[in-house]
Image: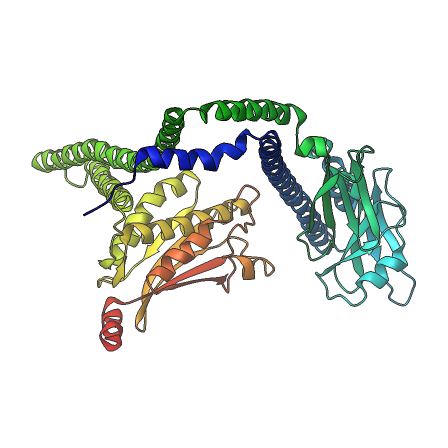
Length: 542
C-alpha cells in the first residue's frame, strides 16, 4: 500500500526552510548576491559587446589597409611595365606618375632610379606632390641589389611617418614609391572611441584616436585588436584599442533600476512566504513561465524552418511559372516551323529565327530543371552527350554578339559524334565564357581582322576543345595565376569566370589549360575523357 505525503505536514517543513529569509541580515545578503550576479552579467555582456565591436572595426580597417597596400604593388607593376616598354624615360612615365599622385594622395612621390653600373646610382625621373622626401638613389640601389627583376622590397624613408616600396625593373632600373603612412587610414573610417597605431619595424607611422580616460584608472580596462597587414612587400602592423571604464561596463542607471526592482521583488517574496497558498501559486507561475519560454523557443525554430521552406517553395514556384510560357514559346515556334515548311519556307530567314527560338527555349527549360533540382536538393547526374552538337549550339549563340563587334567566329568539329559524360548546360557555359574572353582580348587590339576559332578534335582517349584568338596573348606574369579565384586582369573583372570554368571541367574528370599560340594570341584547351574510356575506368574500379 502506497503512503502519500500529508500536505499539512509538508507545508510546515517548507515554511521552516524559508523562514531564514525573514531575517534582516539574510534578506540583505540575498539582495546583495542578486546585485553582484546582475553586475557580473552586465559587465560580462558589455565586455563581450565591446570586444566584438573592436574586432569588427579592426577587421574592417585591416581589409581597407590591405586593399590600399595591394594597390601600391599594382602601381609598381604598372610603372615597371611602362618603364620597360620604353627605350628611355619619357613624358609618358611622368604623366602616369602624376595621375597616380593625384588620385592616390597617400603616394607622395614616385622616383625612377638608374642603378649602379660603373657609376653611382642617380635619379632619372622624380614626381612628387610636395609632401614627399628626396629619394636617396644609393639607398634604393642597396635595397633592390639582391632582388631579381620584377621583385619588390620595403624600405624606410627619411621623413617620419613615411616608408618606401621599391621594385627592380631590370638590371639597370628601379622604381620607388614614397608612401605617407598617416594617409592609409581615412578619418571617417576610425571610430570616435578608438586609439589607432599603424607601425612598421622601424616605428609608428600613425598614432591617433581617442584619449585614454584619466579617472578610475585602476578600474579601466583596454580592449585590443592587433593584426598584421597581409602584404609580402609592406610589413605593416595595425593596433586598435578601446579604453573601457567601470561606468561603461556597469551603467549606473540600469544597475539602479535593477536594484530597485530586485528589492521590490524580495519584499514581495517575503510577504508571499506568509501564505502557503500564495507560495504554491508562485511556483505554478514559474513553471508556466518556463513552459512558455520553451514553447516560444520551439515556435522560433518552427518559424525559421518555415521561412527556409517558403524560400524553396518560392523558387520552385518561379521555376514552375516560367516553365509554362517557355512551353508555349517552344510549341508556338515549333508550330511556326511546321507552317513554314508546309508553305515551302524551309531554310529561309523566318525558319532560321524560329529554329533559334526552339533551341533557346529548350536551353532555358534545361536551366529551370536544374534550378528545381537544386531547390529539391537532388543534383542532376551527368549523361553521355555529343560534344560536337553542344559546341556548335553555343557557337551559333555567340556568333550574334561577335558579328556585332566585327569579330569573325569560326568552328571546326568532326563529323563523327564526340561522346562524353557531361552536363550539357554547364559545358556550354564554359565554352561561352571562353569565347567571350577571347572576343574581349581581340577587341582590345582594335584590329580589323579579329578572329576567334573554336575547334573540337579527338586526342587519344579524350576530346580537346580549343578556343583560340589572334589578340595580344597572355602576359607571362599573369599566366600562372589565370585560374586563381578573384584574380582578374580586367579593370572591371571579378576574377571568378575562369575559376568556375575550371571547377566545372574538373567535376567531369577533365582539365583546362591556357597558353599562347605560336602565331600570337591566347589558346585555351578543355580536355574531357571520352565516354567509352570513362566506362572502362569505372568497370576497372569496380
